[in-house]
Length: 79
Image (cartoon, rainbow, N blue to C red; front, side, top):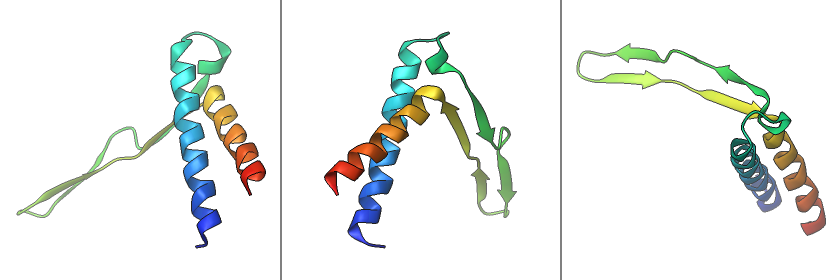
């Protein structure tokens, strides 16, 4: 991957995190509206010697989507 691709991925992740933080500041508003997607109960792999637990959940909110869009716009101005 090129350096610009990594920059876009990092900016979008930062935008998602800040968007969810802002959405969490206003609970009950439209910014906090969204859904949770992923494995609600973790998957366990017991190998006898070691036990591994896998789980992945995404909490997508309106504010998180706005944050990702804003990060993409910022990326377009940077590039």
